Structure formats: C-alpha cells, structure tokens
Length: 244
Image 1 (cartoon, rainbow, N blue to C red):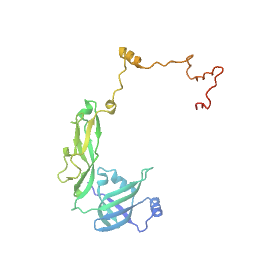
Image 2: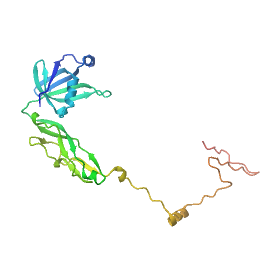
Image 3: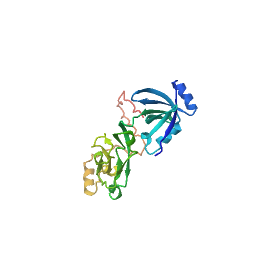
Image 4: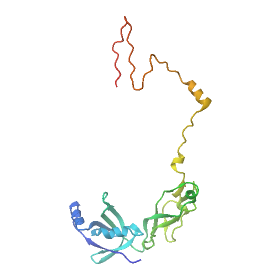
C-alpha cells in the first residue's frame, strides 16, 4: 500500500473567527497531539482527510502529516462534521510510535446469508459493529470479517467465536453478542383474543345487564330532552346544564 502524505500548516491564531476565515480559504483547523509533545495547532485540507475516511481502513489509516517539511506518522484521533451539510469542519491527529501498541476500534463486516434467514423466516440483527483491540500501528486491520451463513433461527454469534489476526489483542468482552437471527417482530406480537361464537356468545350476552329506556328510542346524534315536571310539582333548583 502506498504511503499517504497530507500537507499541514502550523497556525498560531485560534478562535471562531479565525477558524471561519480558515475554512473560507478551503482549509480546516486541527490539532496534532503526541505522547511526549505539546499539542500543535495545524490547518489541513478537508478533501484529503475525507479521502482517508473513505478508504478501507477509514479513521484507522496510518499516514504521514507533513508539517513544514517534517513528516510525522499519525492516525486520526477525532474529527467533526457539520450536522446539516455533512462537511468536515475539524480534525485532530495523534502522532504514533511504530514500536508502541495502540488501542483502536475496528469495524466488523458480516458475510453470507444466515440459514435462519434463508429457510426459517428470521431476520439478522447486527448488534455489535466494532471491536476494541490493541496492536502495533502497522498491524491495525482494515476490518474484521465474520461469516454468519451458519447462524440458525434463535442462535447468536459472540465475540468469543471470532478469529482475529495473530498480532491483535482483543479488548472487547468475550460474551458480547455480535449478531443473532431473531423472529420478526410482527410474529412476536400476542394474537388478538378469539371471537366468541355460538353458545359462548349467547352466554356472554346473557350476562350483560339490560338497559331500560324511557320513551322513544333516540336517533343517533340526537339529544334526550329532560321530562317536564307534572303540574303542581317544581323541578329541582340549582340543576346545572351539562357542558357540551
């Protein structure tokens, strides 16, 4: 794999206004960190960083940051995206020593169609998409490939079932589930109560109290008028009308 070199400029001024002017020039602010160095403010091209992020290794890509002719072997530490347009607005770098191990997260990539999906009507649930590992910078894998074609309905694949490269130390707990094949949610819902028919329906109807209505049956949407008191009798005072 050819070496990747990203040109960087050192910067002394910081702040929102300075960063805004920097982005107007087609650059983004960033900071170079190192184990035995003070943080160095830098400016880089967002297009070059975006190209690295789109590569197979993504944010775990090892490359050279050329700062005024001095190349530093770095890895992306953090980056920020503009939430609406999705443009890069900031990138931080970490200078690495090739003889010292790093703790990084590597993406998991699933391969194959599970048996439980093909023939048993299940769906694949991708639970854990990254593994935390420790290794030397040159030994960072681009991704961890996992075959799930053997998974049956109700079965799961744990981290302990994975095979990692020999020079990689696993930091994620072994009992963490990576993927499983589950029953579709629609089938998990409780079926509605069965309709009561025949004698059972009659028995159920017999238990309901009969409502005795006075006068004529009201048409749907009509209001029942209160009965007028007979001559010589007064209606109850203080009776409130029902609010509509």
